[in-house]
Image (spheres, helix red, strand yellow):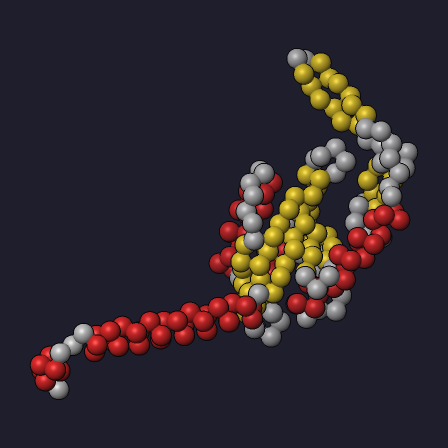
Length: 196
C-alpha cells in the first residue's frame, strides 16, 4: 500500500492511495475498493508551488475550521512571518467577533453543498487596523469523495471598498446638486421673492 502527504511535507497525516469504502444496502455490507493510484507528483508540484506563492491568501482548514496550512499570500496579508503563527488555530478567530457566527454557518452551508459565491468579511490586523477581505470557500474531498476539510481563498479588497465608498459619496453629492439645480430651474421670479 502506498501513501502520500495530504497537503505538504510538514503534515504527519498520510492518505492511502488504495482505500476501501463500506456501504450497507438491504442488510448487506459491500466493500468497494478503489484502484491503487500513484500520485502524479510531477504534475501536482507546479500547481502546489503556484498556490503557495499566490498573492491571494489560501487557507486549508479541517472540518472543524482549524487551520492546517496557509500560503505566503495570507501570511503577507496578516503581517506574519511563519505558518506556525496560524496552524492549529480556528480560522474564524481571524474575523471580527460579530462576523464569526455567519462564517461558521457558511462553512456548514458549503458542507451541505450550497453555493455561496464570494463572501465579504472584515478582519483586524495586529496593529488594530481593519482589513476587508473577500472569501471564497470550497469543500475538499478525499479519494472516496468524503469531505476532509475546506479550502478558502481570500483577497484583500480594502482599497476597492474605499474607492467604491468614495464614488458613492461623490455620486450622492452630484445628485444633491442636480436636485437643487432642478429646483431653481423650475422656480419663477415670484417664488424667489418669497425665499429671499
